[in-house]
Length: 99
Image 1: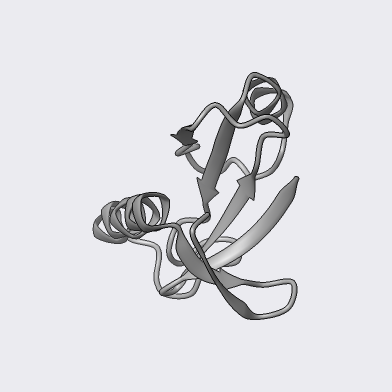
Image 2: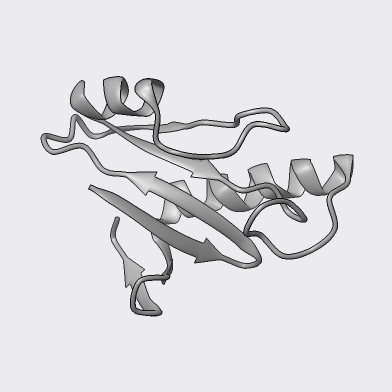
């Protein structure tokens, strides 16, 4: 199941496994790749992993300016999202927690 969340200024695409193993993957694709569901995401979600793919600050859907420092900030924000499981679900703009 695919969702898009926002944590701070970072948009994060999440594919939840149908049968979750309790383990998540924080995927950090390089640029200029477009963060999306693909064979990698499909393979791991079918294997029971929840896959989190952030859009780097200043790129694609995330706000801000794209800089090397903001790439590191994106990783920090995304990691916090994975750990705490709390963000705005962008389909209906509701705060979701316990993800």
